[in-house]
Image (cartoon, rainbow over all chains, first blue to last red; front, side):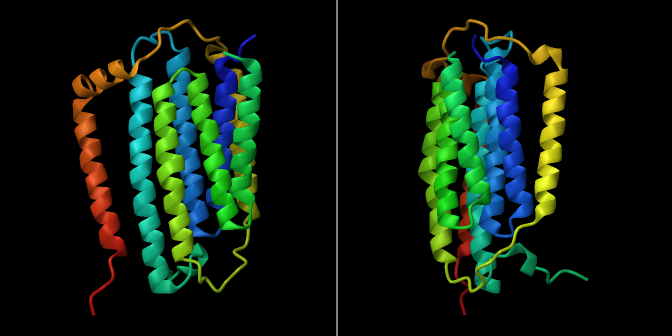
Length: 104
Length: 160
């Protein structure tokens, strides 16, 4: 017996929720970025799984979307880490709870 | 598709991801993050998308993990050690996971095995990128250039 689509979807959902946990519960900015990257990877895994198990597998749409998602995630990581560096330079902290200057 | 390989890769990926989300030391978490992404690439190989798996290893393990390590080194003199942990996030994540698993198990259309398909070669991926997906490709090129310039401007030292 080989794994069905459900197993891949459940693993992808677990990866998404671990990323959500990292993004929501950690207070360090780099941990939040790691969590967002994990959520994007879970979405890419879903795209590839649906492409592989879909009936029109001759089409390459799923693979193309996954490649574009990886490229956009790389751009997001570069800009996010640059933001962390810029914030660190101004506030001397990477704790996102300390960045409350706009708070009323 | 091999069930044993699936179970091994799933356990490896999810435990590494959990370690990346919960380890207190940032550098350990980054290492676990790289392992988790190697696991995701192994899933891509298992599903027959070898090119995407290779791209995943090159970009995430090769570039993004190194970028994160550099950022950790540059923000090292953070005086505050304990960054705290918000338990509401754990509850929300478990609730979302429960909802997702419930909806996956309740959908009969996803309980299917893999059909036999012909392998998608790199040649065909390249041809499709240059014909059907040429406009998205150009847009991603512009986006990557803009992200590069934006990141440079963000971290540039201000002239005094």
